[in-house]
Amino acid sequence: MDIHAIQDDLRAGNPAIGALVSFVGLMRDMNDGDSVAGMILEHYPGMTEKAIQAIVQEAEQRWDLLGIRVVHRVGRLEPLDPIVVVAVASAHRGEAFRACEFLIDYLKTKAPFWKRESTHRGDRWVDARQSDNDAEARWKYRDD
Image (cartoon, rainbow, N blue to C red; front, side, top):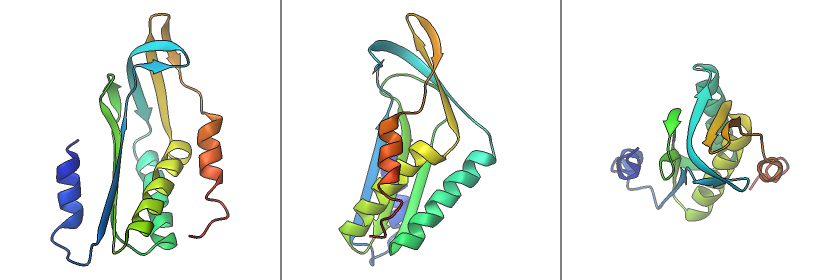
């Protein structure tokens, strides 16, 4: 994942863009107090892309945006590997920041991905976090 290439593609010489906000999620080497050596990220092809497109469409309905890019990896990952890139372009920074945060919050809860971590104790599935559900819930009644 080349964040600069994603940003350049998103801008594509559009002089109406005044703000480009991006988020890169990286794999950590610790989770729930254990050292994590790697992770396998699984998904259902077709279903996952459809869910991501629905999230993108919702962001486009909420804010006046000039472009969105979402790249989410699957397969084997190691600590420091990028997992997800979300980039949003708009005329103004406020919309771009809010849309980017919305997109990552919704990706964490509404996109069907499953994580299996490798630790010194063996492999384990990663459960959903209440903090991710709380982050998503903030957007349910917001229209800014």
